Length: 163
Image 1 (tube, rainbow, N blue to C red):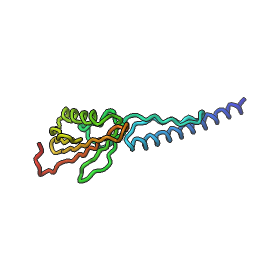
Image 2 (image 1 turned 135 degrees about the vertical axis):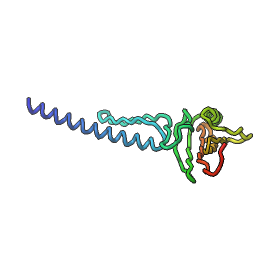
Image 3 (image 1 turned 180 degrees about the vertical axis):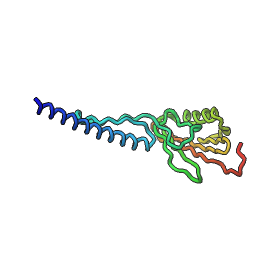
Image 4 (image 1 turned 45 degrees about the vertical axis):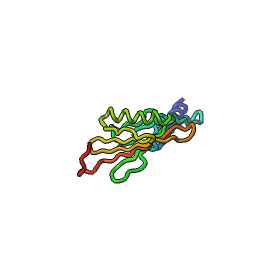
């Protein structure tokens, strides 16, 4: 009886160690996916021999300002580059260009940005808030593939007077 109990304890300890290792692996994969701008939930199930990855929407990248929202239906939001102290965010969605552009036009105005009137026939937007300047371009990603926004944000020169 004692041997069976000891064996059961050892097997439980091994299973617990494996589950701890699996949880650690799940978190690593989730962080890797988050670095690409997506929410995720990863589950490793050794009994069934399966790995399940559920992808969610886009997450706001670390360091991106709160007053420039990420499109709520975005599949991905990633800071791709920054020049001269600025940042560039790329947002992709399955939605068409028009609702994507309208979302940014409306939400930026609601959060205190001065949004320039749209230039005829362009898929772009310009806005200012204090010393910050924002330029966004919107484009289709191809038939049935949704659209993309590229948002460039710069902190204006301290010698300039913003509007």
